[in-house]
Length: 280
Image (cartoon, rainbow, N blue to C red; front, side, top):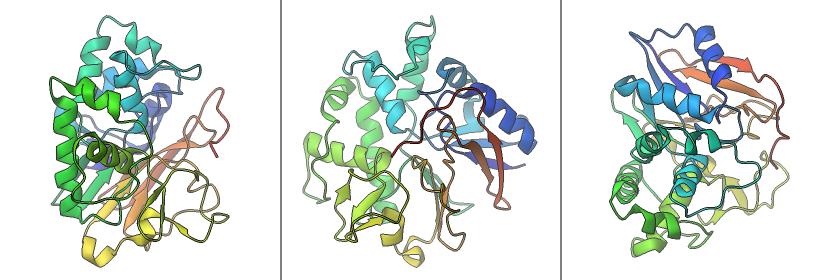
């Protein structure tokens, strides 16, 4: 039995199936972890959602920013943008069922046996792992609630950019959403920054990748995350860190990657067809 953590699929169904063949995935024995952004930008969001939903408890999926955008668009809260490619989901006879399935996915997945956590973007330096689990559950409950449209209507924006336990209402939920689905860099005082999306190097010295501001010994777990397609463009993330990054830029001209958690082996397949320019 093996567990594979897979980076942002973004609607690339054929690439996903090629990756599973490459790593020798056995649907009867193995488990798949998806690090968010199952949909959008690629050509087959509908096929990806159908495939992952049909896996049932053989898959664990956390939500990413593109997944939330699809849910908000399906509820009429966000306008579909020119580059969005999930109309196949919205127009499908089972589209509503799939959107509802997606809405009930988690923000954070924990495997105590493997001492491993999976999120889409990251865990803010101000939170312990236990804090992240509590706040992830808090956001998931709001997203699954009958009045979830209220959350979707208020979750967009960059403020507040710092965590305080006293945050309440939509401000609190907006920060939690941004932390789990949009974060890349933080200021060294812990404030979130959304102005930089490229690989570490040329940024202002006051900014740092979120994971460099965490204490690996205090965390006591390995954190698997996606979201940051440019992070490995100029070299692999150090294996000495207590984090593993699995978004290698599928649909952005890179590849789709699966990390086998049992032995830390990576499997990757390249994109096929037209790709988008790497986001900066």
